[in-house]
Image 1 (cartoon, rainbow, N blue to C red):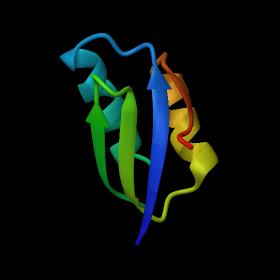
Image 2 (image 1 turned 60 degrees about the vertical axis):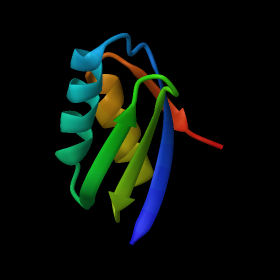
Image 3 (image 1 turned 90 degrees about the vertical axis):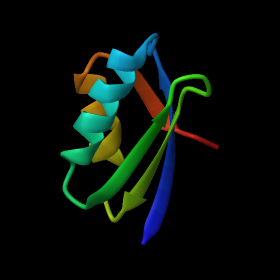
Image 4 (image 1 turned 120 degrees about the vertical axis):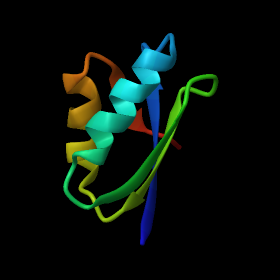
Length: 68
């Protein structure tokens, strides 16, 4: 299983966290997605394609990039 971390910008509340988590969980290959509002990060477990993860977050109206 692969772990991917994304940095997410634009989240301000619990609703934002839920929207990002729900969007990520719909991406094929995602087994779990945890979103941390304070850190502005997500931790995704599974075999999803990175670009699909980023696009799912962006479609919800937030910025996303690979966390390094």
